[in-house]
Amino acid sequence: MRICAACVLVLATGLPAVAQDDAPLSAIDWLSDSVTTPVVTASPGTRPTVTPNEPPVAESALTPEVSVSRLDSPSPDRVGLLSSDVTGFPADLWRGSAEDTLVTLVQAQRVDGLPAMQALLRNLLLAEADAPLGASPEGRLFIARVDKLLDMGALDPAQALLEVANPDSPALFRRWFDVSLLTGTEDAACAMMRTRPDVAPTAAARIFCLARNGDWSAAALTLNTGRALGDIAEEEDALLSRFLDPDLFEGEPALPGPVHGLGEPGG
Image (tube, rainbow, N blue to C red; front, side, top):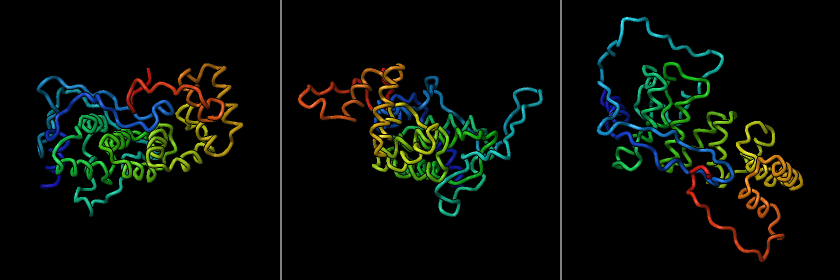
């Protein structure tokens, strides 16, 4: 199938694997530090290779390990926004490959290729398909797809994908929280954090959402507690204090700008 061959081309040979120096955008890095892409390294002059329509060759005569998935914990890897009828991709697009292999390939894709290749990659990331071999309940392939969409700047599709998957785990919620900040829809994320405080990515994010929900006293108490326990860094303390009560700092010099870009962990 021509479309399937194109999928292989995108993931295996179309875009070279490089280290991700520019991690996906994090909306307010001091607030969440949530979206970071694992570094993918490749030897010079090498890239993942796939030979279409050719069965894999065994590396030894030993019995291979069997990958299993719990039936009571469906993986979000299967979640997508575009059905097979829309994309033309088969429903078993991921099924024949191991989750770890697909994660590595997705993470390796560059986002500065030709527009046609980028459009194909975007459709591939948004495709609804059966989960791959050994799909984890955490959905590592799903998370890699979301991170790559963020890397491409496709905020609305990434947000919609997360919402379809129900971002009720810490890993998914962190990404939803960041995207919501970027799209100005953080009220929904803060509402979930109010009912599910266990998914809060950081103390700073919890304080931010308490204030957004109108509970300024609880936000101030949480800040003071975090400060006493050492959970709030000095820079975060200064930012959050000005956020909660800007009048106290009126006339004071502005805080220095960040020394690292959005999406990079603070030092």
